[in-house]
Every structure is written in C-alpha cells, then in structure tokens.
Image 1 (cartoon, rainbow, N blue to C red):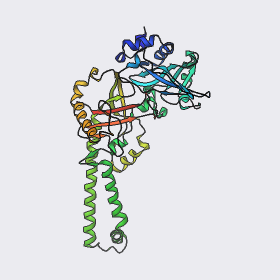
Image 2: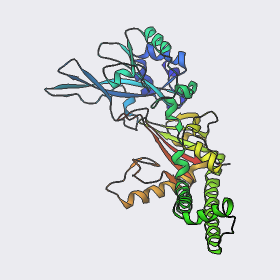
Image 3: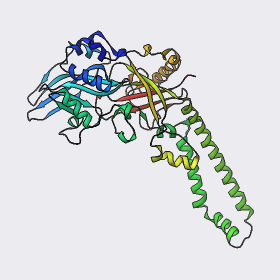
Image 4: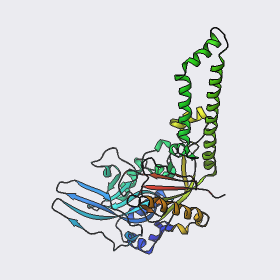
Length: 394
C-alpha cells in the first residue's frame, strides 16, 4: 500500500493518489525502507530549458493549503523565445517531520534525489551539486551510501554543514543569549558597558594607577585620599555592573534550564513540533561562549530541536491546549507589530513574521518566546525552517 510511505500525520487521500501513480514511487519505497523516511507533500519543481543545453531548476512557491498534493494540480506552462518553463512533480521526504530530500523524475526519465545539502563536490550548478541522478534506483542508493548520506538524526558535529538536516534543527544561541533583555538592557550591552568601564579605569585614568603602583612597588607611600575615593567609587560601579550581568544571565539561564517547546514551519503544509534542549557535545567552545565562560562563568550552550513530529494542523498536536494562551497573546503582539508599519510588515504564517528587521531582537521577552530562521539560502526551499520557541509548561 502506498499509504505506508506517507507520514501518518500528513496523509491525505489526494497525496496518496498522486504518489501511487508517480513514476518516482519505486525510489520512494527503497528510500523509506533504507533510511526510515516518509513522504510529507507533493511539490512542483520549475525547470527552465534555455537555447543552450543548460537546464536550470528551482522550487516553485508552495501553497500552504496543500493543493499541490492533488494529482490534477499543475501550474501553467509559460513559453517564450528564449526559454521554456515546465513543471515537474516532486515529493518531499522527511525524517520525524524534518525535510531531508526531494525526489523526482527528470526530463530523461531518470531518478533524482535532491539532498538538503551539497552531496557532490562538483557539478554544473548548485542544484546539480545537491542531486544524485541515475536510471536505476539501486544506483542512487549505492551512491548515497558511498557519499555517506545521513539524515539529521545520525549527524554529528563532524557532519555539520549549512543547510543540512542537522542545521535546520540547530539553534545557534549566541544571539539568543546576548540579546536577552531585562529592563530594556540586553546582556550584550551590559557586558559592553562593563568592559568599557574597565577600559576607562585602566587606560584613561593612568595617573591613579601610577600612584597605586608607586605605593605598592616603589616608594611604598600611602595613596592619596582623592585617589582612594576615586578608585573605590569606580570599583563599586564595576561591582554593580557585574551583578547586573549575572542577574540578566540568571534569567536567560532559567529559560534554558526550563526548556522550550519548538514549533516550526517551512515551505510545506503542516507544522513541525518538538522539544529544544541544550546540546552537551556541541562546539560552543569554538565561539564567544568560551570567552563568556572564562570571564563571567556563563555555561550556556547551543540548542537542538528533538523529538520532532509533523502535523497538518497545529490543533492536532497534543500540546495545543497548553500553549494556546501563549499563542493568543503572541498573535496580539504580532498584530500590533504589523499595525505600526502595515505597508512593510507582513505575517508569513500564523504566529510568524515574514522577516525580522535589522536591529530587531528575535526575543519577545514578555512571553519568553524566541524566533529562529534557519535557511539554506535557496528561494522557496522546502528545507527552510522557521522556529518559534515557547517556554515549556511544567
């Protein structure tokens, strides 16, 4: 039965019918068996044949209502003197709801596996470097094995690549930590203020330091009352700044310790739901966190979204009733955000902005929610994940 190759939560009669009549079904069967993948949607791939032998492919904008799952749905053909635009059907393969690959049949009736990351070192185009093509399904499977293709669940840091399944579930928390605000001051700004004050004390007020050094290692004379008073005030100010940093960090760390429910959307019908927790074996030591850990005792790591599932409707998830109060308040917040610049600001999908403006924080501190957009840079990409992190309800 074709139904067994479709994600249970994404199944529709239209999707089952179109898949059952698709030429790509034999490869879908083998990939589902080999890698435990499932079909989540039918989509359209736009192919442009130019006068030369060059062929260009790209993903067509997706309708979130699922109309592309219908076998009778085909976008119009558009022809002109320089190129011919046609549309090929493809199917998105997911693992635990996360898009991993798109499969389709090309103009030469070959089986094509379009990976979420560059799987070949060479190719005549970006699309080609992502794609394995063969007349035989068995050859596609052999090539994937030889290239050591893995879905996200089996990836480690060594397999990390931008645009890969691991990346789509990976939350780089540097911005998340630095931009967390308390009383309109971010952690990053609090640290900058402290380090600026230290610089002023040690680099600009050298006369005071000279007197201290002379007292300690030179004449041994006591420092003046003026110098003592000045340095005491400066050190008290630095202590207050340090305490402010630890206070802000304490609040963001509490958010991390609590954990997050992750809601994700991409160029696909449906919603991805999972849990976001800190990664123990991540590469945080390679970035700003190493410095923060040594100077300020901050032990914050990146997040990975796990235990994911995909659903046609958010209301079908088991957590919907518990998060609806937060989502309702979030919707009000976003409506207010759009209302301030209605000609520029739009809603991508329920609870998601179309874009975050320069300098705008991804935090909504009042609700403890955070946005993260993981993109592979390809327009209309089915691997393009937008995440909303909501504090877990205990």
